[in-house]
Image (cartoon, rainbow, N blue to C red; front, top):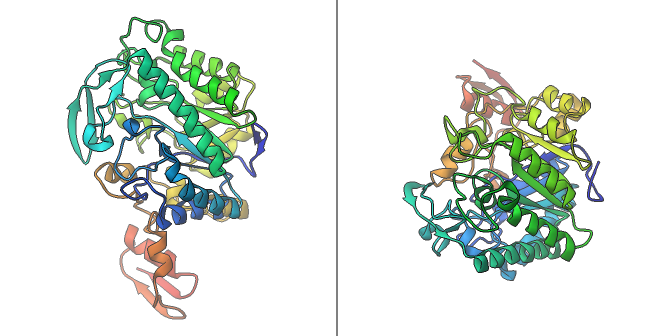
Length: 404
């Protein structure tokens, strides 16, 4: 299927997940390339590399990928070339933290629709109050998004994803709790959606033919947040304003009972956001991407076959098994994600992203450089926990392995 005229080899999308594999300034590293390249070689159709802020004030984590300056272009071009060489299409998520960052992270006073306190956890937790954006500052940020999209196109990305989800800046504008403005950017839903739709329209006007995916939290999951009836309307407006696909997510940092709802843990059912995607799909004429516990191949395929979504986004599932697509195509069982959220919890604590069931995740360069791995031997692994089973799986192709 195609997104804005760009043909994708299958219906699997890798969504944005912060890795901390960039260097301290935000430059692409060999580890960045190896991590995303592994998912492309594994058969993923569209690889969306992690959230990158269009301006320095929007950086939300240390070692976040950079796109706010031309100096990042050489590394981004290397990354795109590697993904294309592996057969995948490449996208980058343009997202701005807004009030959900700190000056010690981004180097500038945080900005937001309104001066509402935010609890920001980045290695340590702290409550900050961002600066309320003036109209001039809103225009500057809008311009920064468009310029970042131009850099993405220059780097060779096939499309970009506009991040209007999960409690970051554009989501903050949509959220009544975080947007208490009394001007044309606050109050009525059309006003709260104004900045997001303006950015989208200007991207489409200034980059003709360059696809833009609109990723939206259609439900914030707390009483004073964005409700689904409003999120549904924003999705329809985005499709009418030129979005080439709608990526339907849900959740916010203020979600109840916890923020984990936007990355649903194992207590939540498979396909937890599929109903939202299906409702949006029935109302728009552009492709819809579904996300949220879709790592079970039967559930993922049924979502597409039944017409509930056009694409499925697999985040943690591709952390657990970068070869998910190739294995499903060949009828081979995949290594399943547990939805334990070790990946995001440890990343928020300062570590690179990782996976409980896949020790190679984000350590691809280390494993590629490893020497002296046993071959042609009889090996007994005592203990069938995650470590024992992972070790047995890694060596089973070239050894006779017995697990006790």
